[in-house]
Length: 362
Image (cartoon, rainbow, N blue to C red; front, side, top):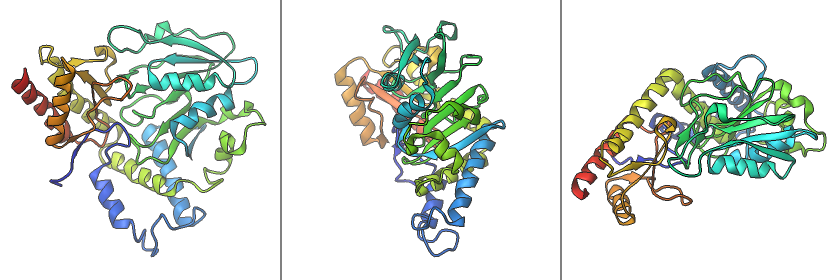
């Protein structure tokens, strides 16, 4: 569609055009039932089919081994920051966190409300933004779990390998890079992700949990904050975010029909290479903010030589149809979020705009 913006928002983020068109077609009459899916009971056979099929799609695309449950929850990653320690940080244990940026820091601070915590490793405070080397991660004695944030949306850094924690449960916040690349999920005991970047619209949170992790949850946790409430009720204990799960279903089918994870990852790397090349070949006009070895394929952070130039860059970009390029308010500068649904053509257009802007202002 000619009037579609070049959408580089960090979240809620771009959705596949094919998915939006299908949702548009079905919004009034879903599956010939004479009602929108937003109007039907979550106890109906139609919604239960969507719920079960969406779980199966996650299992299929991520190649989850036996013993994992796929859950649909609410409250975003921010609620998971609390639920993880509430359910898993038992007396006598210590929760370990790798601090890699704003989101890892928030998860760590939330855990401090519930028990003993430990910083297993942290990114450098000066120089390019980075991910700590795996051999820098040190677990405390009696570790309840190790928590990592696989992709830092604000910093633009990403893990490309994960630590081996042995018998210590590995927990991953994958809100901004889940299903963007292939990885082995089996070392993880729990993975969570807000949907609004790669999975669908905001409103639903995906949680993947190993069933044996539920055995030690304290009995005093409120019902709606217990993982076993969702596992034992197939995520249907209360009214779920029906429309968001339906949209996730469509997005997962779009990923499958696009060739699956390998094809999506290949395209993501091609997309981001266009923009990183514009940065690296600019002779310092643009400067990447993340260490090259840790550069995210989801969030590209960069800066220009002055505040005035950055302001002009954003103004010119907006005039040319680019949306969402202003960096997070906590760090400023620039950020292009190139999630799964951001088309190759949008990334190509941004790279060409960057080269042209440098030609006109360098």
